[in-house]
Image 1 (cartoon, one colour):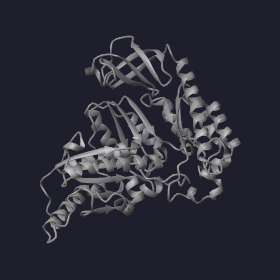
Image 2 (cartoon, rainbow, N blue to C red):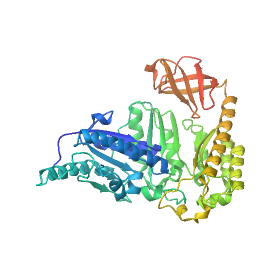
Image 3 (cartoon, rainbow, N blue to C red):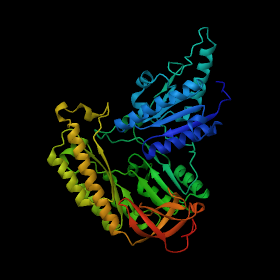
Image 4 (cartoon, rainbow, N blue to C red):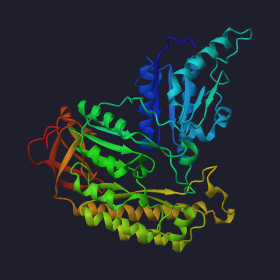
Length: 468
């Protein structure tokens, strides 16, 4: 196939989770390797890719609205290619081009290796259509031109050998796993990303060593159920220990783990390797055993609390965050109250809270219609959960005012001469300083809190990145 040499400018706009952010960087890397210039806005681009999430209906509605906005650009520049990629693209498939006929490319998460070829094929089809006797393509931007849908799930695709195009900075996401072997009844991920696929450990370590050589000092290992990772004889605790000992890496995090794979071996590595941060995101989803069983989470409230105790016994200062869903079909008021009680018992440092969102194709949508919770009741439960979560977070953070913490300066803040960084425990801190210091480590006194964020003051000279 003959590649079109021009145009070669691409813009990738990402919605959703950390895995989507990583996929966006992967697509940028694939395109850059093929000669594309990655630009900062859709107005500068010849190809605009909207990288999507399918976890909740609201996220999909946002994307559809954004794609409709981009249609205006296409009216001005009919040669513009618009693509929708990621989980929503995989879920909606052909229905997406029917709903939005101005979309040229629909590509699921296993298609990115073929992204340059797919774009070249689209351009050739468009050229052929324009050269045809009828002129072919609707140049108003409102109708249908040549389109391409790439939805094959590849059981072997873990993007081995491809490099992400990361933004400059001291932190990096490192995907070690794609897909998921769990079948939680509310979750679309296994159906749009396929089964679990793990990268070879030697490739992961080579990538992290390369990042360290470029000045990255903090890495976050990324996977759908990251701690279920295994490649031949290398289990996740083994990999975590090796990553923790890479020269130049000063902080290691990982997300998102599954509670069932929080083992004594994993906790021992977390507790003994100095570079592994005292912070963990541990999704609980619900605080009632019947609800957890209907969700197919494969643990009970009691076993979840045992995992929390295991972690806090070994790492007393660990900060825990979580995900919680309310109004799962069939959830009674008493069962919802059990979830509030669990929040009070565990006292998470942070919680990401959601109403149940039906996802077509997931088992939960086939539950009896009478089980689905009235929207007003669901909203009231969500608001009650948010209130409890925020109160607990504020109480914990107020109790930490006065602590002095090591902070990695990640970026500038909203105000002039303001810096933003994170502690080892994942707490966000803003304080005054020079923008040129991004990437440095320093010690900061936590002077006050807004409930979620700290305002601090440096207490001694900054510590250069790379020094212990």
